[in-house]
Each structure stands twice: as C-alpha cells, then as structure tokens.
Image (cartoon, rainbow, N blue to C red; front, side, top):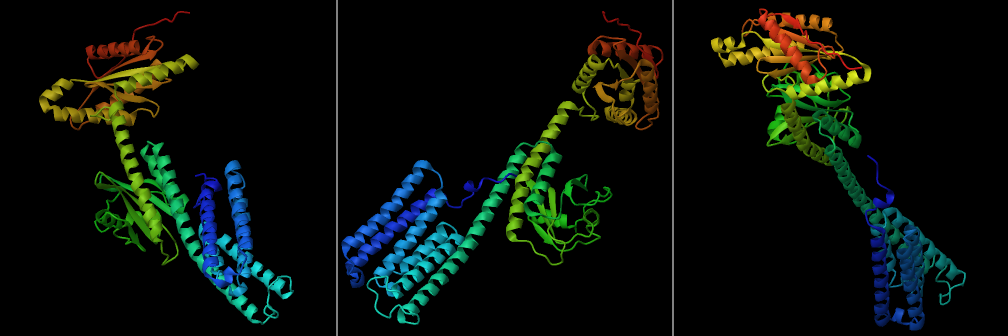
Length: 523
C-alpha cells in the first residue's frame, strides 16, 4: 500500500499549530501586562519600551502567519523561524525583569512544553537547546559588561547569578526531557493507531474490488503478513467436516483431508470461545492436520471469522518462532478487526459464487446448463472464424429412462442422472464441455475434433456409461455432428446431432451415429 505524502501524515495540521502558538503569544502578552501592573520588578520597565517591543513581537508573528496563509508555502520553515523569535523575546523579557531570578522565567518552561506538544518532541528538545544558548549568551554578555543594569560580580562564574542560571537550565532540561518523553509516547501511539486505521482502510479497499472467495482469502493473508511481518499465516475453513486451506504464507503443502477437526482442537476452542485464542504449542493428537501444515508451530494466534452468527473460517498466524515470544495486545486487536472486516467479504464472495453456479450449472448434476452449452458453442464458432478449426458435438440420451423412473422411482432416476454426469465428466477430455441439455439428455462439445475422432470419443463415453451398475444398469444412445460439415450455426448443429441421436434410437439403442446432414458453405 502506497503511503501518503508526509504533509498528509501530520498528527496536528500546520494551520492549527500556528494558531495555537499565536494564542500562546497573546497569552504571554497578557501575562506581561498583568505582571507590569502587579509586580514591582516588572513595573520598573518603562511601559513604552515594554509595550513597543511586545507589540513588534506580536506584529512580526501575525505578519508571518498572514504571509503563509496567502502563499501556503514553506509553513514549517515559518514555524521554526517564529519559534526562534519566541526564544529571543523570552530571553530579553526574562533578563529585563530580573535575569535568572525573573518571576517570568516560567514562561520559557511553558514555551518548551507547548512546542513539544504542538510541534514534536524533537522540536521541543531543539527549542530547549536554543533557550539554553540564549541564557548563556545573555549571562556572558552581562559578565563582559555588554548588558546594561547588571550588578557588578553578579554574573561572574560561581556567583549567585550563575548558580541560579544553572538551576534554571537544569529545570528547563528536566521539563523538556519529561515533556518530550511523554509526547514521544503519545505520538508513537497516535501514529500506530493512525497506521492501523490506514491499514484497515487499505484492506477494505482491496476487499471491495475482490469477489472471488480465494482472492478474498489471499487478500486477508497478504494483508496481515505485510502489515505485521508474521512469518507464517493460514486461512482455514471446513468442508464436510474436514479442514481445508483457503490461503497461506510460508506453509508446508496442505495435508490431505483425511481427518476432521477434533473437538479438542484449538480451532474448535476458538470457535466456541468466539474470540482470538493464543497458544504456544499444539497437541499433536488433537491438531494433527494443523501441525503438518505449519510444521512445528509455535506461538500461534487463532482468530475466528464470523458471519451470519457462525464461524465461517479460521485465521491462524504464527507470530514468532522464538520460544516464549509474546504478541502485543494491540496487534491481536487489529488482526481481529482485519478478520472481522474480511469475514463479511468472504461470506458475500461465497454467496456470489453460489449464485453464479446456480445460474450456470444444473442443480441436479452440477454440470454446466444449457446456457453454458450455448456459450461454449458460440466460442467454438468464433474460433473457427479465426483459424478454421472444426469442432464436434455429441447428443447423449439415456436409454429407457422413463421405464427406469416408472420401475424404480424418481429418486433412483435422479441418482442415475448424477451417475451418468459424473462418468461423463471423468471420461471426457479436459478441453471438452459436458453439459446437461435437459431431461435425460446430455451434450458434449469437443473442440478441434473431426467426425471420425468424435466417433471414437463417443464410443469411449458410451462404454463408460454402459459400465454403470449403480443405481441401475444403464446404456445410452449418442448422435454426433461436426461444424461446419453438418451445419452452419450452433442451433442447426445441435439439431443435426439430435437427428443422429434418434437414428441411434431407431437402430436399436446403445450405439453411436454420425450425422448424415450436409452443409456446403457458399464461396
């Protein structure tokens, strides 16, 4: 997932930082005015001088913000420049109102805290360095006699002014480090949470564009591997009581489905608990299939995926190969959210796949229906128009099927249809399309097959049907037609094969007949 630009990742927007710092500056001016009215050490400053410097300081800050809002460029550079101006103003204010003993020196601490919280903990440390340098510069300026009003000897090394300066610097750094540390913790937590939300949003976007059940499963597994770096993960469901692997990463080949999920399995416990389950080791007897899949698994988290009030799959992740390694609660929580978000997508994908199969497959036999047969014929006609490759069609009818229904019942008749469908699907080539045409009739499309080859294939299928003994002995009659030898369009081709089929019926059944229709395409 592509990360957003840095400007879009700020925890606090730049405009808000500038606005809050302007509020801080107005607060400094208000504190200064109140102190001038109430504190003698501050009242000694001439008001025109105090007011003029303060007004110039505020004017410079508001002009800088106005310029940034007009051009919307280099905002961080402006923020840094204004913080430097803040430091210079507070250094002047502190020294002008008593130096290291100034009652307003606490404003510097407030400034450091505000910067660490609004900008970043790194910026808070940098501004602490700036305040410390300014304090030392003013001290040495006073020691050299460059600052008016300094008491002789007060600024000397080892003097009371220097000791008080050291105490102030130590307090400044204590506050800066404490604030920066707490701000760093909060910032990391906020960034982690934002990263988790972005990961969830990215997963949701990928799931929205995925409708295949296996693709949904792979999307979930890939997401947890990419976001958290787990060495191994698997999404497992149950089919007919046996576990089945939908998607995996870093696993052994899926074991055969030779066993169900034991009631003492960790997956059964997670299903009953309806919550994430953490285990350090697996019981080889209870979780034989899972042990073979993960090969010596350690430190697993099993997260059930719930939809429609039931667990439809299990997300199994291995978070560390080292014995005794622990996983953060935050990571488990976000993995559970991943699973919850994917559960509905997986259920919907399965539902859509089921609906599509109902629309394209015969409900009794599971073979493609007549609509799919017509689509296959259309594809073959299009292929013939490109490379003149012929194809053949078989029409297959079960002999005496009505008698079978009358003698044994419709349940046996349905079982016979399913047996024939299964035998046809097993015997036909992989490229052939076997479909149920209707009633007891089946059709087979044979791409690239000439009449004589089609006859051989039809005889193979006829003998395969004749070998069926359960639920009853069966035979079939078959008619074969080839495009474009016997017809010029799919409908006519099926009719030609159907006429050949009924010729087989009239000739005694349980045989194959090639169409005698002829079609000559105009030059």
